Length: 625
Ligand code: ADP
Image 1 (cartoon, rainbow, N blue to C red):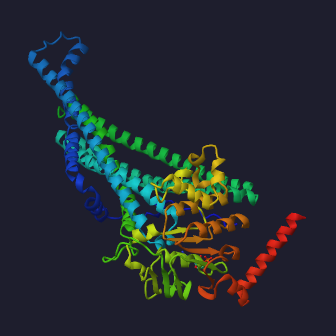
Image 2 (image 1 turned 90 degrees about the vertical axis):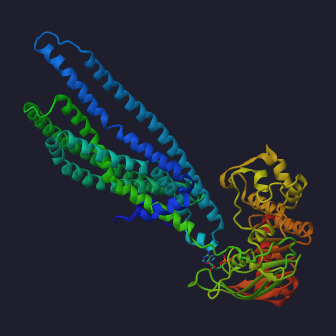
C-alpha cells in the first residue's frame, strides 16, 4: 500500500526571507481594488481621525485630576473646604464633555470604518474567487495533470482567506498602529521628555523579547497548521477510500497512523502554549520594570515641581497604549510575508497561459455533421515525455460508430481526449492534425465543440443534488420525453421507478448511494440528453454485466441514428457492432476492420475475442453447475 506522505500546508511554503509587499499589493490594487479605491481612502481618513482621537483623552483625564487634586488634599489634611468656582466647574464639565465627544466620535467612526472595510473586503474576495474559478474552468488539462487538487483548493480557500483578512484588518491595523505609535511617542516627549526617555529605555528589551519569541511561536504555529492539514488530508483520503481500507483490513494501521499525527499535533500545541506563556511572563516583567522606572522618575519630578499628578496619570495611560501598536508593527512583517505569498500564488494561477483558447478567427459550429479525422498525429503529454500516440491516421465518417480496443496504456483515452480537444497538438513536441467536419479542430469555437462532442469517462462522476439535476447537468432545459428516452436507452427507467423519490432521489456526494453500474448508466444518460453530434464513450459501461452492456450498446445504435460514436472498451462484445474497429497498441493502430474481418485476421483482436468468449462460456457453465 502506498504510504501517505505528510502534506505540507500552504503557509509552510512561505519563504522565510523578508519579501516585499509592494509588487503583490500593486497587483491586488490594480486588478481588484480599483472600484473601491475611493471608499478605501475614505476609510483610511476615518481611521486616521479615529486613531488621533485616542490621544487627547489621557491628557484631559490628567487635567481633570489636577483640577480636583487640591480638594482631595484639603480634605486629607483636614483643611477647610475650598470654594468651588463656576470657572472650575465649567473647566471640569468641558473636559468631561470633550472626553465623551472623543469616545462617541471614535466609536461611530470605528463602526463606519469596519462596516465599509468588511464590505470592500468581501467584494474583493468575491471578485478574486470568481476570477479564479473562471480561470480554472479555462485552463488546459495539462495544467491539472501537473497540479495536486489539494494545492488548488488551498489557493481558492486559504490563500483567498489570508488576503481577505489582510484587506479587511491587516492594512488598516498597520496604518492605525503607525499613527498611534508615532502620536503617543510624540505626546510623551512633549509631556515630559525625561520620563519619556525612561519609558523608552525598556523598549528595546521589550521588542527583543517579542521578536525572539514571536519568531519561535510563528514557526510553531506553521508546524501546527501543517500538522492539522496532514491530519485532515489523511482523514479525507482514508474516509473516501474506506472500502479499500476495510478491504485490505488496514483499520488498525490507519488508526495508528492517525494517532501518531494527533500525538505530534498535541506535542506541538503544548510547546506553543508554553512558549506563549513565557513570552507573556517576560513581557509583563519588562513592562513592569518600565512602569516602575516611570513611577520613580515621576515621583522625583513631582517632588521637583516639574510634573503634576494629572500629567503622571496621562503619561501612564499613554504608555499602556504604546506597547500594543509597537508589538503589532514588529509582527507585521510576518503577516505581510504570508499575504504576499498568497497573492503571488493566486497571481500564478491567474497568469497561467490559456493554451486552449479560441483563435481570433474561430468559427461557430452551428450544424455539426460529426465527421472526425486524424492526420498523422504524434502526441506526447509533456515535451520531454514519451510519445503516447504515434503516426496515427484515422477517418470516422459522420453517423458511424468506431470501436477502439487494445491493451491498457495503449493510448485509447488519450485518443478520445484529442478528439474532444481536451489537449491541443502543439508542434514541435506533438504533430499532425485533428479535424472536425473537414476543418482543423481549432477552426471551431471551443464552446461549440464542447456542446457538440460529449465525452463519457470510465469513472462516472456525479454531482451533489438529485438524479434529475445530474441528468440535466449539461442540458438544464431538457424535456420530460427526452429524459425518459435517455433513461430507456440506458436501461435505467425501471431502477429509477423503484427509488422512493424517483428522479428527485438525492445522489449523495460522489454518487455513493448508487451502484457502480447505475452511476455509469446515469453518466451515459446525462450525455445522451445533451444531444451531442459526437458521443465518445470511454469504457463507460465497464461496470455492467455483459448482458446489460450489450443491450445498452444495441439500444444506443438503434436509438441514436445519425450520431457519430467512438466507443473505447476492453471487451470485444462492446465494439463488435461498430462500423470500424481499430486495435491500438503503444499509440499505434496495429489492426483495423469490422468485427468479422478482425476475427478472420487471426491477430490480437481474434486472440482476445477467443479468450473472452471462452471465459464467458466457462462462467455460464460454472453458474449452471
Ligand atoms: P489507455 O486508455 O489505452 O489505457 P491512456 O491513453 O490512458 O491509455 O494512456 C496512454 C499512456 O499515456 C500511458 O502510458 C499513460 O501512462 C500516459 N498518460 C495518460 N495520461 C497522462 C497524463 N495526463 N500525463 C502524462 N502521461 C499520461
